Length: 307
Image 1 (cartoon, rainbow, N blue to C red):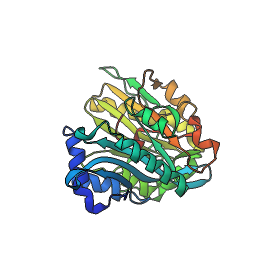
Image 2 (cartoon, rainbow, N blue to C red):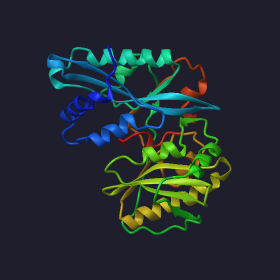
Image 3 (cartoon, rainbow, N blue to C red):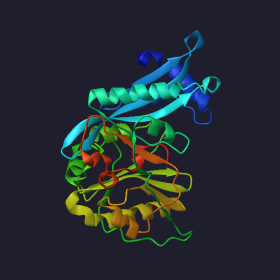
């Protein structure tokens, strides 16, 4: 079963927009998502039906993942879909098994964020459940009081430079997608999406926010490992930003046990119960126990477009 190529982008786009007409993709979005990540092009699996039309699709996007002191290629499985006329035939299961085999044989690792409708497929094909998506939320008062940020926060209007790469390296975080400048510049250049980016105390931390309707999302908040005491001030800044924008809530992802989780909890960003999305990992040939320990992962809303 050959992989799909960039030349078949038109068929991929047609299927995606047939499945989700309310959230249509552009060709620019598709190329950004699958062919522009700094770790390389995605592996795109597909099955074609009558008239060689694409009827099932399974994407494994390339990212570099830190596991302790090592970097390995990670594959984020996403955009899994079958044309409605061809469901119930096990097509996605075929593609899932092929993707699982490729990850194993290549020495890569995999990760994904399925919902309750698709998580059983990942269990059947050998993925390991890491945790529920660590979704946190804090409601804001209609008449908020502004908090002292007590930090020098500077907005970044253009691209990040290597200072953010140094912040990520100095964070000491054990497992997560490599947040170097190349990755962050790609991730936060998603077409037709606006992000607000900030550096904290010049080179001690970074904040990336997304405003959507009446909610402010903390896509990424990272500090150097020796500057964790900056987190309360950084969260104050996020609350002030949200208050000025008139939002009624702020959300974030952060696992329990993460070096910043206590500061988030003390600030009122509590882990939410009843979350029906999950985090699954595929260690491949990697035997490191770090990969399957949710307390060691840096998981944020920047890791997913759905939160």
